[in-house]
Length: 120
Image 1 (cartoon, rainbow, N blue to C red):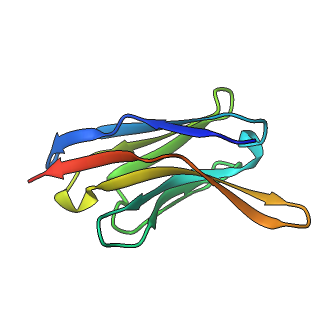
Image 2 (cartoon, helix red, strand yellow):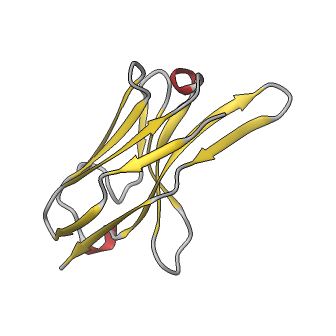
């Protein structure tokens, strides 16, 4: 069973920085793609950044150059460093772990979410 716990959200002024972290339980972290998604009020959940088990990263165009995702397989953690924050970055940020299960296909696990609010 995989459990994801996020921390580090909060309120910051435009142009500021925040770091959100996610700690995973279970034994499949190191072989899984992990990442961050966000959902703003009235909008669909969208991918922010993901990192594969090989360390390959992918970012949404809206955050490229401002956000950095990193992972530690030793500690089962994935972090998102967010710099130069904008009011449009305001959302609930969700940690995600994605794993391929034989005979099932892709299985997604989600954290409970952490609120990030950027004031103008």
